[in-house]
Length: 466
Image (tube, rainbow, N blue to C red; front, top):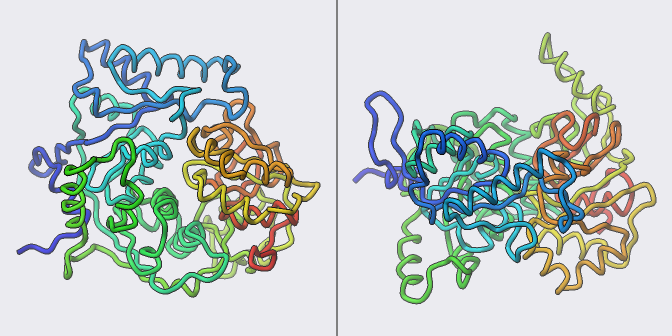
């Protein structure tokens, strides 16, 4: 009997037809849409006189272009406002479930899918957003698609895809104090580079991965895309089942028991082969931070920015350009650098666990005077829990500003921008030039590291502040 990886099992179960020497016609179980990549897709369907084949398999929410303040008011930015209105119109016209602004389950698409139980093991999931890989934490094949593919899925519930290569990344051992899943993924990307998994779908395995909560696993799968991977996934287990049980869209009663029996089969067979494998020791992972302009440019917060030794030609030129943008020098320590903004949020770290961790860290403390601190919950549900658990009161007492759910502060939409030249330590997923605003300088880190920076006003080791 053929030994199969988890990825093979899910992929093969969704192939409708294989094109000889070409891609597979691949069935999609769930399609998430938002206001940025869907309007043109719907417009093209209308031009062709084609409807949405399975409206019940699509779920919408506005998240990318919605401001994180004053969501009860008219969106000022004309393009953002039009896109949100188009999403509403299209969902109403085609009978698609929409979690709109102001509703109980509005939020970032990759946060609300799991918290509602829409995301489930063994599914295929797509969205017109690269960080769809988040949903792979449940043992699903989830990946981002472009506007033409959004149109294809709406019309046919299928997509044309060539099967990617398979990679397994194993992290064994016990994580040290102050080390989180964000540190794990930043460490991995720093080791294999921002292009190190290009062409692969990554399965994360090992005792350190298995020890993580579902929310922590989502952080890791979310950032798979930042090392070039098509997506990432983790085999479902009791942690997964406990998280999903009782959620609104999860199976109930006898259906639940049947589903769990099926989900337990979703694991890589002993002896199954991968195209590439990496192994890392959890004991070597410490709190991480990025210093450059891609997520692969990361070091331990106690480390020094790499020198140009051994670099030549265009590589050296590009490296120095990145450091120049950030205002850093090769070889210098990053610890002690002054910071202007901290940001906790995004589809990477805007979940309730992240906000709990920050609140616990800053309880009874005050943010540094030089710091502007933004907390952006990933959804209305996260916001609601933060109020109910008293986290908002703790954060506001420490000087943090609670904003409203959305992606805007992560990708510099509306007025959610870091000013040019200012430094922001962010729990987000990207530190590209201008990502959080023209000229803004972003450093990626875990919620714990961000909390420590907020309190001290500079890059620091959260273990020392703890």
